[in-house]
Amino acid sequence: MSGSVLYDVPGPRAQARNRIIGAVTIVVVLAIIGFVIWRLFATGQFSAQKWELFGYTRVWQMIGQATLATLTAFAAAGVGAIVLGFILGIGRLSDHAWVRRPVMAIVELLRAVPVLVFMLLLYYGLPVIDIRMSSYWAVVLALVLYNGSVLSEVIRAGVESLPRGQQEAGYAVGLRKAGVMRLILLPQAIRAMMPVIIAQLVVTLKDTALGFIITYPELLYTAKLLGSNANFGSPLIPSAIIAGTIYIAMCLALSYVAHRVQERTKRSPKVQLTIAPLQETTDTQLIATQARTDNRTGQAGGSV
Amino acid sequence: MNQIFDYPDLWVEALIGTLVLFFAGGAIALVLGFLVGAMRVSPVPIARAVGTLYVNTIRNTPLTLVLFFFAFAVPLLFPVPRGSFLLLAILGLGIYTATYVAETIRSGINTVPIGQAEAARALGMGFGQVMGYVVLPQAARSVIPPMMSVLIALLKNTTVASGFSVVNLGNIRANMSENGENQMVTILLVMAVFVALVLLLAWLQRTLENKWRVAR
Image (cartoon, rainbow over all chains, first blue to last red; front, side, top):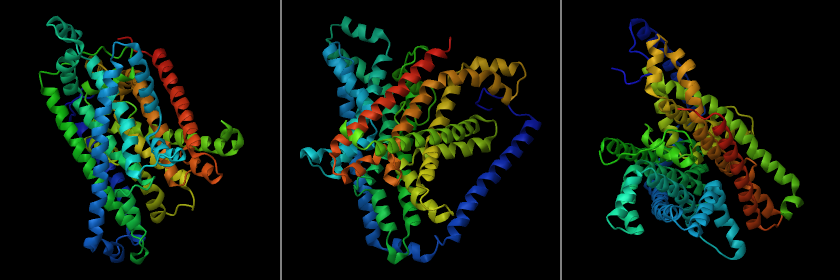
């Protein structure tokens, strides 16, 4: 009946106790929600004046454009990050130390620096040496660099988690290094790592909101702009609620795709990862293990 | 390097701001995350549902939006003392990171072999005993590396608070540019500080991992 191994199927007494704990939980949660709603009412956030602004077509056009700006930045950053991820990931798997070592250093550096600091460097730092770019490109490039480095680790973990026999069989039938990588290893690795890759894309989508701080006119920036409209009583909370709903809906949709893909991957007989138990755990093995263990919106380590 | 020596006060203040956000936010995240993680594996269906809802919603909300809410919306709703941006940012970071802590704890519990929990139940232990005596002590060890990854991410995320009037390494650039300093150098220095801090945490991660490795 119950899927968990941590506790027995509840008997009559446990059921009664669970009902009481459940009721207490509901009361606490409702109390918190009720308190927030009461404060929203008490401070007049539901007054008609504050919501009037959102009755105009022009305002919704602005919100639509802002959403589009968020999605454009996300799409460009996502594609770029995947391309960079493959380049760096394959570079780190190279047999030549002169390729592997520098790539490793670059990946570690890119992963250690906060995305926002990258954006600041691109937007405020580079103009010092006369390289100027729009806030759009600062957002996209920073996201590409950071998420590309994370994805490269994911791809590497995927390739390394494959059974050695795959590679050896590839060489045995006469394929070259590139052929083994392209025809044998990568297809399997990508299939196994698809949920983690999509989860990283959710992170990318979330991080486009950082553009707000460097004044890229995306959804959150527009929400702030609409929210400071004094003619309509500065409807900051209504506009934050609207922008928040749009963000959460977009991210949930993408997370759901990741979840579905993971379910399919789990059922697929083509994916059989062999990972040593958590002994000498490195970050990458963890990514691989996380992909294996149940992790609904699988998150690569440290990529929050 | 001159910038650090010319304005030691600014840099120390910024570094302290980052560290306060990190430690205070981390403390909230660990406590709240542990609670939510426990709720998500508990035998009480409603607690599971609440935990799942919390994790799925906050994890799919950008941190910028969470902090936006705390910085701008919360002061409108609740009687918060003016200018308590640091406190609000700490709360926001804690609530956001707690979801990742909860997920890490949950997947740590999943790494404990099923037989362990089954054996404990066969001995007649209840949920509290199974978790307290058998599962959590083992899960705690395998949870350390991913938990440190979550904390490293939190450290990097503290910079987001700089967009909401909290003094930390993320907005020292603005101060420096007011002083007419080279902004690019400032940002490169900030990057260096972060690389150093992350390397420190990664070293701690490896040390703890080796110390508490599970023999399995």
